[in-house]
Length: 292
Length: 318
Image (cartoon, rainbow over all chains, first blue to last red; front, side, top):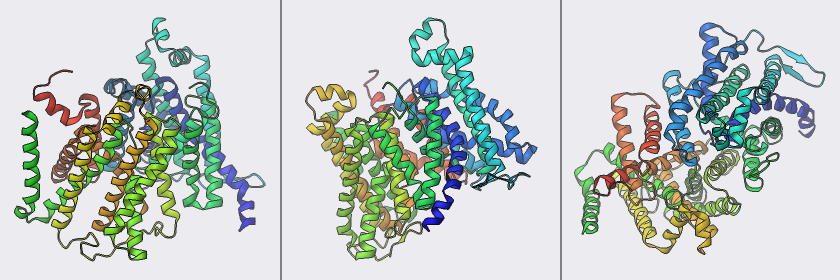
């Protein structure tokens, strides 16, 4: 038993890295939204679920490969997020922290059960022609879709970093994150930036949905599985920190798969909740977070 | 004068609730009313911490589930009847409240952070219950149906109806006591401005922990009731996110920090659900309606339906 655990360890770590990169992408959207808008987007899991369905139906109806579907789902998610914030969340919450939490909770209930109503509770997966092909790294076999998802999410994280640091939009977003009033005074339309940030955060979910679908499944409650994971990564990496989300994603991905190996599938998930609780209690600013 | 009239109305409604089963022979309606009272009771437990003390929890179900497991295991494994087991359930709920409250309030977690940490604790308990032997793991526990007062089980729907009515009345008395007591005033002060409350000499940590322990004890008793009525318990039921949401939902819809808010909210939401079920038969529809109602109430009626009544009966504006 022990030697089995040891011999499976490299595979578990690699597997954790693969999923970790996608977790990072999910958390990236959450941390970006938190860093700029200072709101906790409780609808994050439900919106990821919608992105997964979008990728699924693009494949099953139009035959578009989920990895190509990124080109459609990401812009679509951006627009959806932008509109959602502009016309619902921003308008209805009256700027109160707890109200936003409850409104986004309400939205997640609505989305989940609409998915239930229209798409039924069936678990759906896609079977690509290369779904079961693997690469032998010597010490571990890796499936091709996992590898593609891994590298694609790294590329997307890099693109997001470019967007934030090189473009005017990124500059404006960072300005609003740092100093709302000041940004308003120099002529930045803060409300638009808020909506754009929310849109970018949801676009990250769109990408994550497309990358996740080939190696996972979707049903109306898939998003719930990622809610605690994403929040854990965000508090671990520091609320609002992009690098933190990336590193946090890998830490959580590896914790989950190694924990699952040692403690068994069911108890393995407990590691994430424990990390979450401990970090919230002792380092609410996260491992890489700065000021309060 | 106004107060005494509303007190008469309350007494009248209570008498009505007591004699109602004599008029209604249909078990379906009694069951719906039982669920309404049960959810109102849980809502009231949430209201004490969320409504009065301003600490929103997203994992309120953890007390319910722990209490349910406590009395159920005592009964099925050790043969201790639930009429005693319920006190262990209350104690278990209060202890979970103490632990979670101490852990999170001691480190100054507030607002959204507190909401999320309670969610994480509930999830953790669900996973633990799923992996342990004596909770029956993922298979769950089946309870026997042996109606007697000792087992808190009844031959007909009427018995459970009266039990749930009794629970809701007790919960309302607790809330009324809270509104008059010094402790309640301290909780409200904490809700309005925690730092100011601290400066006034209120022991904020102690008051918040006490509030979450009351919530926990109430939740524990609800767990016993549920298990004895529905005769089955497994981790997804005991620690269901949906129930955590429902208890905050009925309270917010009815009116947070009010004595009758949870009851009003529970009535309205369940009647909406029943009507919706009649019109369209499909799973999930009632929850879609719940979600929209939650959003609309937060956006347009921050004081809930009770606030609307109060607004109509004279007191306009702020």
